[in-house]
Length: 141
Image (cartoon, rainbow, N blue to C red; front, side):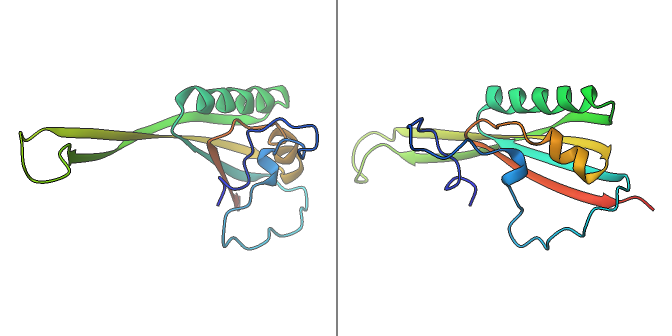
């Protein structure tokens, strides 16, 4: 998965930080060669950390606007709240007290109209740890 690729250590011998261009959707076929045509690109960003997610979105949008590309987003999708309620007592005895845990998953979508090489330039920014990136392209007809 993506988490095994992300590294938070800053050692001297560590590899350079990953960029968005390094990520490939699992099971995705290799993209056809670029012929310079304009494509619709959808970038989906997912994270549990809102600040890191918003920072990556802002960096992406800023890079796209500097290249004079048509940008839509970031579109904020509803937050998924994964909840677990469990008994505090290890056995069934005692007062019925409960622990409630919640994990929130935030998702953003950014749409671009650009050629493949321009998207590579934009997505060469370094991303925050914990932010998962998915890039999908559609050919305009």
